[in-house]
Length: 313
Image 1 (cartoon, rainbow, N blue to C red):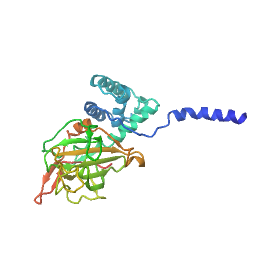
Image 2 (tube, rainbow, N blue to C red):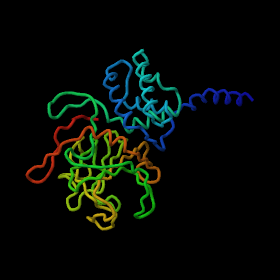
Image 3 (cartoon, one colour):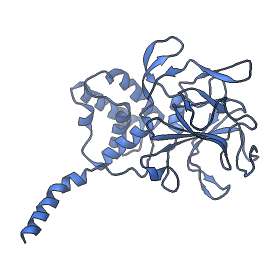
Image 4 (cartoon, rainbow, N blue to C red):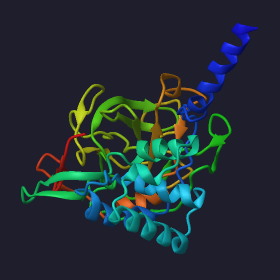
């Protein structure tokens, strides 16, 4: 009887801790609007040096917490204004979030996507130290593109499945640049993605996938597995390869485009297989379009990046 009472007391004492223990992230609903991404950048300019421990990704997560992860400009504007008022009043970022699994989930998932997006960098053109958006759009400046939100659309080659990336239409040969730096983990042919490059971020949380690269000469010089690339570096060239067991074959069912994907990896079993987590990049890609890296063509036909924002994770 005494042992039962002690066990009951122990369980009762641990219940509050268990209730708020961070749960492993098994999926991510990245539903943020482009407008919120831009507005939070303005608040970062105001609060990043303040004593409130401001975090860009937490600001986005705070809006998601208040709106149930369904974004509406008018309501979200009021939420951000309330956040700013509380921070100016002396509260810290952590004070804005309740102790709950859902709040932890939002901070973790939005943090995983947005962690590298905003911060300090050096302007390559001037050598000045600045702060702001430092991840770039994946297509070099001066080249046309078009896109729409196609995440989750049906695909049938090989087997019926959902489209787990974002297609950006463009011209064959357009230089593709690394949105974030990291290490090349895949570089070669894939029957679905054609010539493709996979880059894992330095913190190992993000895997960027650039697919359907150009026939015959898909990659920038030196691209191979194990190479470390820097943000904004030219890594390859837009094309329309893939959907073939034979290498170096163009698709015949669509126009030239870049398949741009972002996978989040919190645990080893999420690297490959049914537990993979891919996110909708439409709003994020629209936001990134405000920073496009220039690519200058050299005499040997290779492109090198210019006007980059230099930073390290």
